Image (cartoon, rainbow, N blue to C red; front, side, top):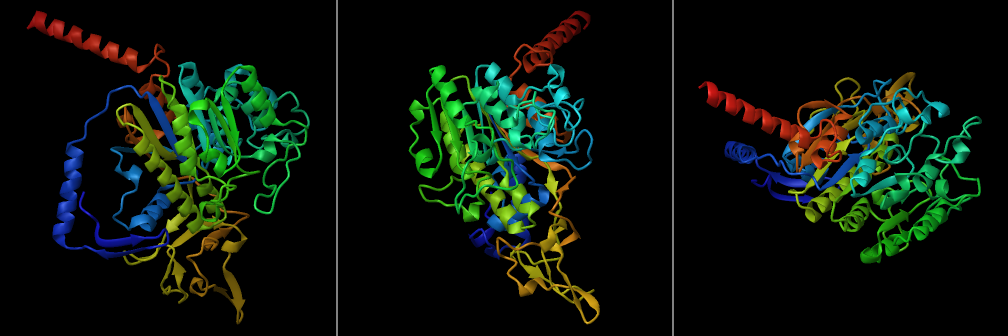
Amino acid sequence: MLPVVFLCFSLYVHTVCELRTDADYWKQLAQEELKEALQLKWNLGIAKNVILFIGDGMGPNTITATRIMKGGESHKLVYEKFPHVGLLKTYSANKMVPDSASTATAILCGVKTNHRNIGVDASVKSGDCSASLDPKARLESLAALAIKAGKSAGFVTTMRVTHGTPGPIYAHSASRSWECEDAMPNGTEHCKDIARQLVEDWPGKDLQVVLGGGRQVLVSNSTGTATDPISKWSCYRKDGKNLIDEYKKDKESRGLKYNVVYNNKELKELNIDETDCLLGIFSNAHLQYEFERDKSPSGMPSIGEMTETAIKVLKKNPKGYFLMVEGGNIDMGHHRGRAKTAISEAAALEDAVRLAVEMTDQHDTLIVVTSDHTHSLSINGYPERGSNIFGTLGPSSFDHINYTTLSYGSGGPGSFQYNASSGSIVRDNPSDKNSDDYMYEQIAAVPLEENYHGGGDVAVYARGPFAHLFHSIHEQNYVFHAIVHAAQLIPNGTGSLVNMNVMLFATSLILIFYTFIYS
C-alpha cells in the first residue's frame, strides 16, 4: 500500500502531516486497493482459535475519529485492513436503542433478548427472577460451547468482570444490575447474583482466563484507596463471601494450576507454564482510563497487556481456545460526553487487536472486531484535512461562535453549554476552553444525566477461517452463529459446516452422475 503522506507524526493528540493530493496519488492508491481485492481468497479451514473483540460503544464515527487521531483521514486501523467487513443491526428484542447486556447476549449467545437481561431469551421479562431459572430460557455462550468442544475459554475486560458485556459468557440473569447480592431486591433470594455464577457455576468456574475489575462485587466489605476507591456506580458485596478465596479453593480441590494476580507486577511476572487458570482483578470497579492508568508495578495493566497474557495462557491447549476482549471504557468515556477519552480507549483497543494479530496465525485463528452499539457522536462542519479532530472551527454563520468538530446528540449536565447574556441565551464558545483535553465534555443537543446510546448499525471486521461469513448486513446475533460454524463448535449438530459441506459435496456428485447419464 502506498504511504498516505510524505511525513506524518501522531501523538494520540492530533496528526501533523504533509498531505498528498495530486491525481497520480489517488489513482495509484486505488490501484493498490484494487490489487488487494483481486488477490483475496476465502479461507475455508476450521477456526481452531477464535478471538472476539468488542469495542463497547464503538460506533462507526468513533472508529473514524480514532483513525484520524492515530494517522489522519487516509490512515487504516489494523482491523480496517482485515479482508472482510459487514454491518450489524443492534436493536434488542424490545428496544430500538439497546443496552450492552442485551447486545452482548445477542453476540455471545446467538439470541436477541430484552433490555438489561443477561444470558436468557426474551421470554424472561426484566427483573423476573423465576423466569430466568427456566432451563429453556437459559442460553449457552460461545465460551460454553468452546469448553464442551475441549477448547479453553476466557475473557478480558476493562470493566468489572460481572458487567453487562462479559456477563452473558457465563451468567443467566433477569437484570444486569444483579452483580452482587446487595443489588438484588426482596423476592429474588432463589436467584444467584452474577458474581457467584462466575465463581460457583458452570461455565464460569471452568473459564481459564478472567481478567478485569470488580473486586467490590467479589469480596465482601472491600476497602478502597485514593487511587482505587469504592465505586458508587456499582453494587457492593456485604454477605460475608469472599469469591476470590472460593475461586482458589475450587481450583485447589480439582488439582488445577492457578494464579490470582492483582497488579502489573504480578501479571508481568506470571509463570505461564505453571498457570492453567488465571484470575486477575485489578480494581474495585472498572479499570482506569488509559490516559490516567498507573503504569507502575502496583498499577493496572492495559487492555493490550491483558490480551497478550490471556493468549499465552489459552494457546497452551492443543485443541484451541475462545477469547472475548472488551474495550469497555470506550463506552464509559462516551457516557461522560468526553470524546477524547472515549477515542483514546478505542485506540488502546486497536493496540490489543494488533498484538493478537502478531501473536496468531490467520490460517487457524479467526479474529472478529465489532461493537455492541453506537453512541450519538457526530463529526461536524467542514474541518480541513490534517486538522485536530478534537479542535474547533467556525464561527457558525448563525450565532457567530466557534464549534467543536465532535459533538453528541445527548449528554450530561456538562454538555449544556449555554448561558444568559443581555437577556438572551448564548452558546458558550468552546475556543475559550481546551477542547483537546481528555476531560473536556463536548456540547450535546439534549441534556440528560449522561450521554445515551445510539441505535445505529455497527461495523464487524474479520480475518481468518470463514471470515467471509462476515459480510453484508446482518442481525447482531448472527455473529454467534457464524463463529459456531467457523470453529465447528457443534461438529455433528444440525446445520454444522461439516454436514453442510458433506451435503453440498454429495449433491455435486449426484448432479455430475445425472449429467453423465443423460448427456
